[in-house]
Image 1 (cartoon, rainbow, N blue to C red):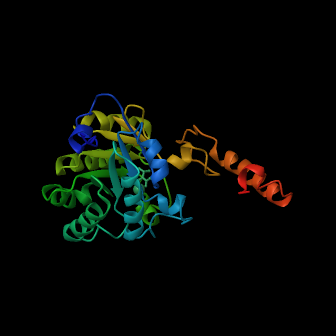
Image 2 (image 1 turned 60 degrees about the horizontal axis):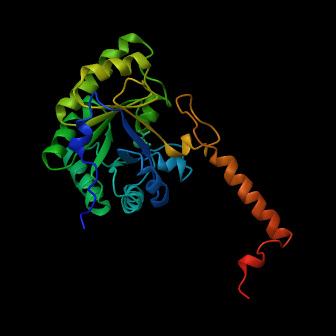
Image 3 (image 1 turned 45 degrees about the vertical axis):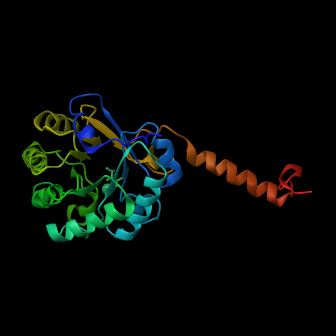
Length: 266
Ligand code: KIV
Ligand code: NA
């Protein structure tokens, strides 16, 4: 029996300028198994701190939590490349610290790549990791782990004189060896421009349809969150569907119609 091989990093990198790359986040075995049928890669994003654990930002997400969710997603999938976010504090200090923590993530989860936030400032670290066997996806534009410095979650590139810095970030992470780069929360023409300027795929979120791929947070596009940002298209209606189911269960427990004949052992 031939084991179905997962999508590889070179396969994703080769999609530059080709058929758009499909990706979503996933944090659990069961949702990941569904996403695996359609996604080229799945990101175990540190957004899980906010989405799954009620945190106010991603800054408090611990490494062990990323590893726990990373393991679940790898177990639940067989086809997609799994990329795990490195959480705040696990890579910024030095290339050596980044390597140690990235290697821990890869060894313990079985994922195929890690993602780190930051452009030019992370170039040395990206090269250090890639040369030692750890594929890196970069992430520039709006970088949520820096929200305390940026003063919140702000769309980038509104002033045209800020574009050059973002364009340089993109060029530098590509040259440093990143196999793809997430462009988050930047004005559409800037994301489109960057996409034409670099040789690695750009993955947009709140960016441009011209990006080489798109990513969304699964719970956002399924309608599980009360509030969604402008850049999210809500494809599903799971919040209200779950509420209806839970409400009906509560009623049936109270009126003793659950469990019914079919749910008891005679
Ligand atoms: O954590 C996350 O979900 C992400 C994506 C939004 C790109 O980094
Ligand atoms: Na993230």
